[in-house]
Every structure is written in structure tokens, then in C-alpha cells.
Length: 381
Image 1 (cartoon, rainbow, N blue to C red):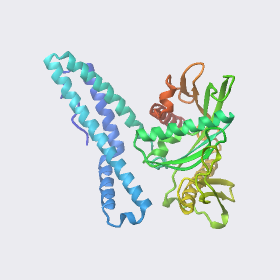
Image 2: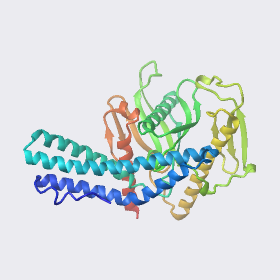
Image 3: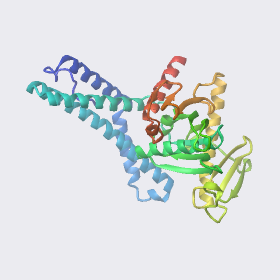
Image 4: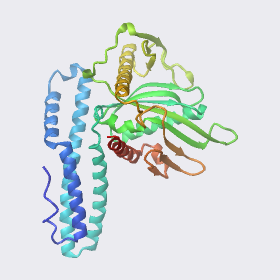
């Protein structure tokens, strides 16, 4: 499965470099083992056979899921294969540069080794996602909390951050609902990230996010602290058996609205569903028809009921609350004034460029969060 070992092929290379390359090779072999390349190839073959069926698009939702999974599985295999090839090429580059005394070649090799190490570390994080629902797509809800119009504006900033992150990775996103605040920003928004392991990756974002800045809405230019909550749920699949009886729900229809409260269409196509036994309320207004909005809202409701069912089961097993899993835990600060910094309060990971973070550059936070969660799980075991 793995490529040739760095040992034996690098007899002419600096021993420190040879040891570093051996370490990279061991890391990659560990990733290849956990991700089980034979099983991955078999899964791709199954998905390709499914995608080739002439009646595939009779069920559009199923077809889209198959197509999305196939693209991402192929990308995973290609990424691992390319990393193995890059490592082998790097070993050759070091040997040739050492043999020829090529200082420029050695400098280029050192740079590539650093890039390869970072790429391997990022992929290694993916192998830590082994929870029951980690492989699922993600349903994300963002809500403005304390802080008035600044909080609503912050909620919209966070939504843009996640959408830009998804765009950077070419992950498709479906926006189910956007409830606009009166003056600016969002009261709440719900969207779905359609990519394998989106839930496992984004679940570390759950909690309360805090923004400190000079408020653009305060004519006296005072500093304002505002809060927004992020909830991340796994998308429900057919095998989850979340039964929802029609008698347990109330369906209300209303007219979709845009920023500032203006109506964006002339029919009552938006749908709000209330689950009477639990009081959970979900809505969807971004699809064209009432039927589509109801179907989307039911998917959100099923995800919320699945999450509640999981919480109840976990509570029965363990009365202790898992830190970082509750909606209300403050987990990250975004400071724009008097200095510039974004800091995760659990992992201590921080960067000094909030603009880049708010533009979707959050992979460092996600990786640190996933590693932190794994450490917490090991400590509790």
C-alpha cells in the first residue's frame, strides 16, 4: 500500500534529512492505513456503478448525494496518491541535490518538505474523525445572541465566514432559511454543507462566538461586545428512523421576506413547522415552492430531533456534560479593537489576522479543535 521506505533509498542524504523524510513516510503510512485505500477504492467503484445507472436521476436527491460522495471519495484517493508521489519525488530531489552539491536544489527540497509536512498534518486530522456521525454532511444554524444590531451583524459575518470556507473547499451549500434583522444582519440562518465529514469537521465550531470591535452602528464610536451562537448537527439519513407523526406538527405558511422586511415574493411559499411535543420550531423560505420549503424544513426538524435523541441517550449514560458540545459555551473571541486577534478559548489556538479568518480561513481552528476534542476524549476514557 505504501511507497518505498525512506530508509535504504537515502544513503547519500544528510542523516537529519533522512530521519525527517522517514518520519513523513511513517505519518503517510498511518494515514493510508486508517483511511483503508482498498476499501476507499471499492467504495468509489460502487458509487461509479450507481452513478452509471440510467434511472439514477429519477430520484434527484439520491442522485445528487451519489454524485457528491463520488466526487469527494475520488478527491480523497487522489490527495493521498499525490502525497505519496510527492514524497517519493522529494527523496529523489534530495539525493540528486546532495550528489551534485546543488544548494538551490536543496533549498527547494527543504521548502517542499515543509509544505508536505503541513499537508500531511492537515490530512491526518481527517483520520481523527471517527465518531458515529462524523462522516455525515452538516446542518449549521447561526443565531444572533446578546448585543442588539451588532450581534445580528456578527451572525451575518459568521455565516459569510462558513460559506467562504465551504467555497474554498468546493463544498456545495444549501441555504434553508435566513431570518433578517430589522436594521442590519441576521436574526438566524440555517444552511447545509454537502460534503462527507462536514459534520465531524464543523462540529467543533458549536458554541458561542464573541466579537469585540468599535461598533459601526454607534454614532459615538464606542467599543461593543456582541455574541452569536453556532449549532452544528449531522444531516439525518434514511437509516436514522426519526419518525415524525403528522399529528405532532403544526405547519404554518407565510410570505418570504428579505433584508429590511421587504417581501421577496407574492405567494405564501415560506413554511414554518412546530414540533408540538418538543416545542422545536424550524422554518424554510429559500426554495421556490411551498412543497420544497416544507421538505427542507422537515429535514432540519429531523436533524434537530436526532440531536435531541442523542443528547437524551448520552445523558442517561453520563450525567456530565461534554464541554464544548452545548449551545451556550463561549468558545472563540474575535477582537477587532483595540488589537487584532482571533483566539479559540479551548485550544488556545490564535491568529492575528481577523480579516482572513472572517473570509473563511478557519482550517487552523478546525484542525486544532478536532485534535483538542480527541485529547479530551482520551482523557475521559
